[in-house]
Amino acid sequence: MHLGQLITCEHISEHEPELSVVIPAYNECTNINQLYVELNDVLSNLGMSWEVIFVDDGSTDAGWQEILALHEKDSHVKGIRLSRNFGHQYALFAGLSHAKGKAVISMDADLQHPPQLISEFVKLWQEGNKIVHTVRSDPDDFSTFKKITSRLFYRFFSFCSGVQIEPGMADFRLLDREVLDRILQFREAGLFLRGIVQWVGYPSATVEFQSANRFSGVSHYSFIKMLRFGWDGISSFSIIPLRVATLLGLLTSGVAFSGIVYAFYAKFVSGSAIPGWASSVAILSFLLGVLFILVGLIGEYIGRILIEVMQRPRYLIWEKTGMETDSTPRSPYPEQFGFERKQ
Ligand code: UDP
Ligand code: MG
Image 1 (cartoon, protein in one colour):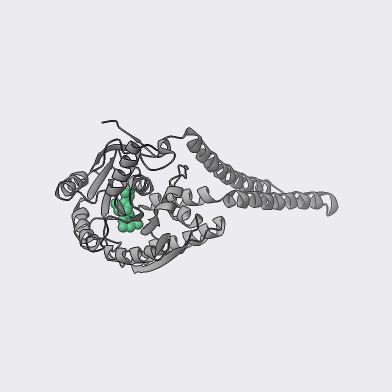
Image 2 (cartoon, rainbow, N blue to C red; image 1 turned 90 degrees about the vertical axis):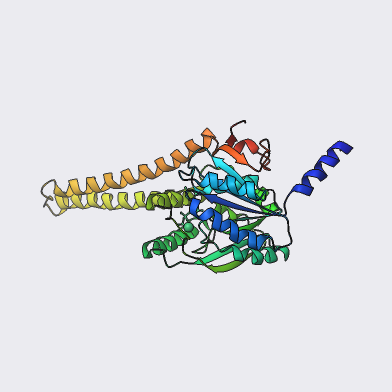
C-alpha cells in the first residue's frame, strides 16, 4: 500500500460514523420528522458519531421531500430513494448495504420501535454482543387476527427451517459490522432477514420492548403482503412443504389403492359389486384435487428458482442524498444488491 492509499483509507475511516440507523419508509411523511426529533435526542447523547439513513420505498406522499429537508437541516440525515415500492425487506436491505457504521441499527419509521432503546442496544453491543435482537409485546392497535397468524407463522417457520424465531421478533435490531458484511453476501431474491439474522449465529442479546401504536398513518402490511412475506420466509429456508407434499401423495395413493382393492374384493369375493359411479368419481376428484395442490406447490419452488436464476437486481435506486453518488455498497458482491441510476 503506498502513501496515497494510506491517506485515503484514513480519510474515509475518519468520516465513517460509528453508528448507523437504517429506516425503510413507505408513505410515512407524517412520521419522519417526529422520528428524527426523537432519534436526534438519543443519538446526540451517545458520544458516538452517527448517521441516519432513510430509505424511501417508492412513497407516493411527500416522504422524500421530508427527507431532503431534514438533510438540509442536519447532515447526519441521509436518504436513498428507490424507483418504486419494492417492499420493506428490500428497502431495508438497500439501506443496510449503504450503512457505514461499525454498528448498524434497523427500525421502522412509524415510531412503533422506540428510539429510546438504542442506548441499551449500544451498551449490549459494547459488551461484546454482535447482534441485539428485539422481541415485542404486541401494541393495542394490533388486530387479534394479526397476533394469532403471526404467532402461528413463527411456530411453523421454526418447525420447517430448524431456525428458531421467537414470535414477536421484529426488524428492530442492532448488527455489528462483521455480521452485516456477512449478511450482505446473501444473494437470494426472496429476502427474509428475520430468518437470516437468526441463521448466521454469533453471540447475541435480546431486548424485550412494548411496541407503541403507530404515530400516524396505517400499516402497509396487508394480508396478501403478509402471506407473500411468510411464504418467502418458509420457501427460502426449507423444503419441508415439498416433503409434506410427498407424504400427502403417498397417503392419498394409499387410500385410493385400498379403494381399488376393496372394489375388487366386493366384485370377485363377496360377489356384490359397488354400484354406480359415485364412489369412483369421488375418489378421482379427491385425488385430482390433491394432485393440483402438489403441482402448485412444486410450481412455487420452480418459480423461486426462476427468479433466482434471473439474478435481477433486487431494487433500483433512483436518487440519494447525503452520500457520494459513486459510493458503492460495502458488499463484496456490489452488483448483486441493487442498481442505481448514474447521475
Ligand atoms: N415499509 C416499506 N415498504 C413497504 C411496506 C412497509 O418500506 O412496502 C416500511 C414502513 O414504512 C415501516 C416498516 O416498513 O417503516 C414497517 O411497516 P408497517 O408499519 O406498515 O408494518 P407493521 O408494523 O404494521 O407490521
Ligand atoms: Mg408498523
